[in-house]
Image 1 (cartoon, helix red, strand yellow):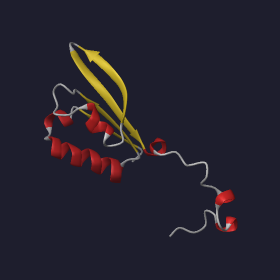
Image 2 (cartoon, rainbow, N blue to C red):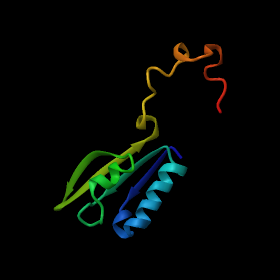
Image 3 (cartoon, rainbow, N blue to C red):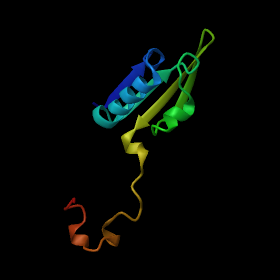
Image 4 (cartoon, rainbow, N blue to C red):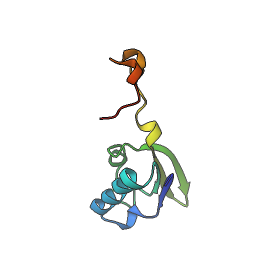
Length: 100
């Protein structure tokens, strides 16, 4: 899938189950993930999401409740290094052809 959206989910799961769910979705099911969570109601901290390579994107206030939006995008996770191109390849004619 292109995007997985988790809303009002982690607050109702144990942290272990939440980590397994979020890690599984991120690793196997979706190239982009967005999580909207009330950190006060859940047993989660911002650093838990950072450990899963997620970014703190936004905060929303609603009737005394603060919702935090954390996002993950596989394409933004690691930028391609500038040295990874045919110029620095041992056999430039084979760059991008073979994967081992």
